[in-house]
Image (tube, rainbow, N blue to C red; front, side, top):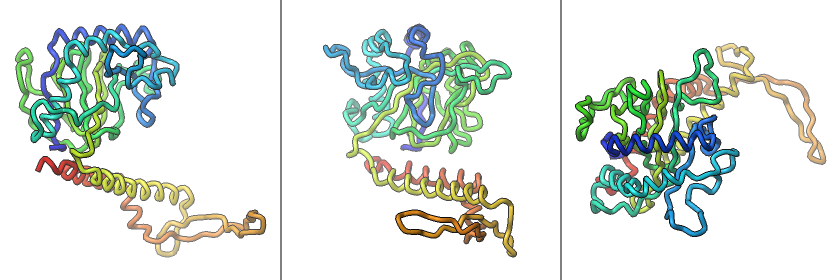
Length: 337
């Protein structure tokens, strides 16, 4: 079931509209929309975090806000959003949907094995004409894998009204037919194009494995706002060794790619008599007291050049990474068999 991508109605139009207004007001008030935050190290997003712990705690601490001020912005909690999400039962409902979708053998209301790693509100905005590297806006998010086993996003903006384009891109998705659950003003099911799923209704929920390679497709106009959750799963519900194996194999592909890049940088275009690239390196000699002295440059042709070049190739890397992803998604939930 980890292969499955679920698209379902979740918030009512009124709830989505109210949350969009609250998010817009808070983002503008604290400067969260002024540029990408540094909360997500590898893939920064224009966002602000949302707390999810007990709002009545006297010490004012809300989990998820340990480092709110690291980037100098957003020190004020989005209290009105947190309270509204609490009032409408957002967190409980989201966990029930995830549990029902990916752990069908659990009791219907048993979502105790799920907990947030992160919850935040993200904003995509069309870049100014002719300014591709506009640091103040984000119109897409490059393909990546999340730190969580499960992830979800809830669209707050109205498609074709507030924005055009966008959606969640999945590298492994070619063409999939979705049956839309529920009524959404007689709209068609969510569109699937070039690996991108585009819900047609504000308030729709998209659930997927965070380990599936995915990203945010570019919007062509307007502003797109969504709530995103990274959800951790209790170790007794899935096979952690499957992730260890996948990370090991993905790491080996990284080594092949980086080694090829290093070889190319040092090869200087020269070839040996049978066509293998040569590497130029300094010849070092160890001297007493941990000092070293160079004796000049030497050249050599690295072994297995053709095989390593093939493993480092873009198409091979993409195919191999998706095969590893498929194996992980197939084996990570032994309890679902």
